Image 1 (cartoon, rainbow, N blue to C red):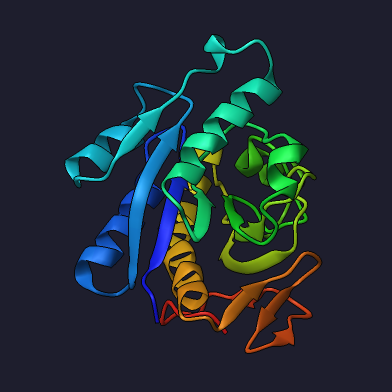
Image 2 (image 1 turned 135 degrees about the vertical axis):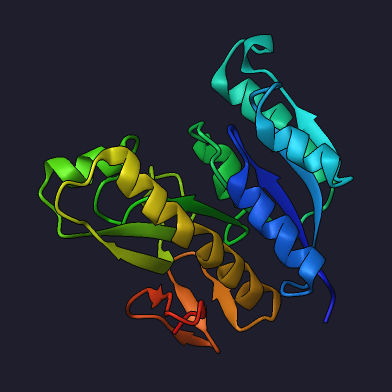
Length: 219
């Protein structure tokens, strides 16, 4: 089986990117990151990519007259590295529907909540404000709907008494990394397949998202 070619999109610290890099270096993940792309020229994710010898491409939205024009140029750069899978790992921009729709089943996003709960930003505070007893992270298929694509896999953590948004975020982040790595691993092995309307495991449609277990595997 060919090694999975990944393009990673990021806007911030790049800790999930680093998790992918580390998993590839350790041999846990059979993949190659062929490019890292960002809308923030000084973000730490680009530095992590360069430190690992991965091509890193920033592109500023300010250089374009519209969101559609930016996205067209941005994804032309992504397409140039010929990725099999595009991974949004802390990429904080909405993507135009036109760019999503021409890449069906080829883009995933890591979102810090148990979707469909708490879409958008400030998810940890949203969970606390709602009195949730459980929180976590989801990997989902990117569609034109904000955080609305089919959910592939999730990791769950309890909300503890006295939690702050920062404490809850830190606990969720510990699970985000193995969740993303394991999802990408199954996609690379061909066991997971992303369709326009659903997710398939061993060619059987998933009724519910896969769950990250204590052994850091999905089931």
